[in-house]
Image (cartoon, rainbow, N blue to C red; front, side, top):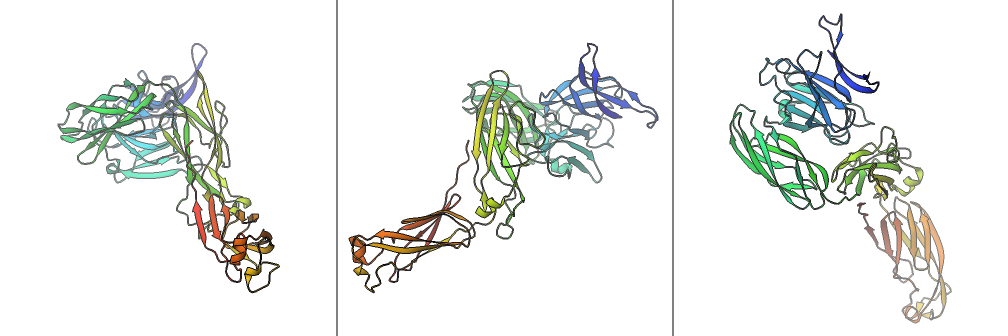
Length: 542
């Protein structure tokens, strides 16, 4: 059997993407095409169920956020009406479904177990995960994430020695990834849960009834809770000695944040006393005035790199990760349109974008996505400063009815290119015109000139080097600059035999790092100093 997606002409002269199966009963000598099935039935897979029927599992090319399924009782010649499986989120992504135990006896408990792999999101190709069904795909209680962050297409298969293999796209720039695991890694318990969708207001506590069914051959005990998010928080509720085949309903109090709004998904989890888990997703709606906004945070991806022994060089492409959070209460389209990274930018909101960008077409309220594809090419000017500043522009909002478009220009924290060690020394010559041993002969009201020499003793460029009566725009690492300062003596300084200005600070900057040296006089006017360093951090909330 081979699956296809066809662009099919309809009776009314319109066109529709439909799924169909092509079968051979004679080892591939001849083939028969089955009937066209459904609408918006894109890339699809088929799996044999425990009783010999076939399940068709397809992505939805209309982008409604869930997998589409249909059942065939005639070996794929025809399929039942198509339905959405709301246990299987799908961001219009190619996924896979297969038997966990392909050699199991028909109608046995093992024959009913299916393995599904796909991007576990309705809006972004991210978080490729494995899901397990214990009842021929009616429910999917097992869930384990294979890769967090950007990840997309996958194919899975049972292989030797009780292992499973998954071949999947990690992101748009890295190579394909191959993963293997066994059944114990999936850590699932056959205990599906169901709950009705809900509607509530922000700032309230929802009493949510959750029904759990034990499909295991023995009794189970444990607790049910919902995953805490920026929108929901809960406390565990106990399930005790639920016998095989039985169901029970537990009411979970769910606190709804005052900022919650719009369509939401609540993730419910049962954890057995043995530590195995089952998952369910409950749809809800929170009604409140709409707010928008995003928070963007970023960091160098190779944080373990030792910059002391392995600094960056000109032309090297530095890996960077952006974490983007929707701090509004409606789903938003987030699009980066400009920045000193590539690949990174997409077309403006509502326009076609190239592959390999950091956009999200429908980021849910309070949700976060990670974009790991950006690369920044190090320039010679940046390497002279030994850091660079991420400069990006983002657009977010909603297109269509009640269009909202927000613009954000965001400067990130400085990214080190080497291990920065800023420092400098300051020397001041003996003042003229006095040459007397007794410096008190310099009288008040006398103009005195002295030379100041600043040497950059660190490994980074210093900017805005400023002291009493002098300044330098920049001094490169290892460079020395001098200037003559002319100062007017006052009576206090003259009586103490000191040059006006000594005892004050000389400051310099390397990015947001400030270095200071205090000038103090000695008998021969050569300067002693101590260096202090302050680093200020810019908080990235936008």
